Image (cartoon, rainbow, N blue to C red; front, top):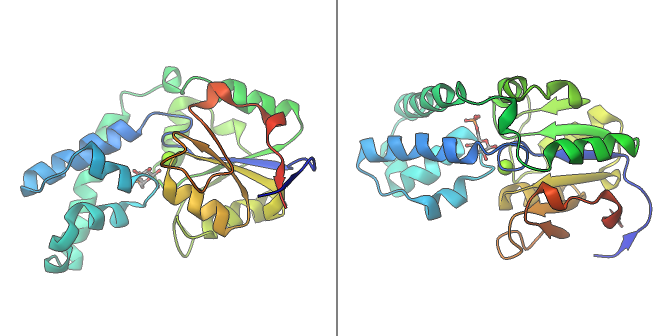
Length: 221
Ligand code: BG6
Ligand code: MG
């Protein structure tokens, strides 16, 4: 991808795995569900669930079993996982913001850019409230009201529209391959948080937000 020095007007932050380490809480709840169903599930398989919405994640966990399960039971299982996940959320607070998150938000604000929080999680708002950072985002977009979740571009395009930004004026920050794919489908620049191997579609990859340097990223052309 070629880049230009044209500045971004907005930065879209993912939640789980970018500004807070809730990925381990999601994993623990899915693992408990899988164990109860006698299904094999481990950290490696969990990688494929990152960034994928609740029912989509359940289908990935169930694998071929999904075709034997009706809609009501599917919903019941997803609800059960969510109850366990919400119980675990009770333990998180402002100290659980990942290293670099506060500074990255400050840097974006100081540069005069708008901020969006774009998450596949329907619990996003309550997690932000617990972290006490909800007021640091101009818009918060979750999957409710969006036709298709990540890796579709819809949720990112909704955030850009609400921020009054064009897609190429947005820099998205994502830790999941599904999220990076969604950003690229939306014609946005993608900063991956993780490893280049896993996030090969990203324009830049950093290990975590302590490496965030807004000046280092040019907008997509
Ligand atoms: C994403 C997580 O942010 O949200 C996924 O990466 C999770 O692991 C998804 O399944 C949906 O979250 P929730 O809170 O709506 O079940
Ligand atoms: Mg994520």
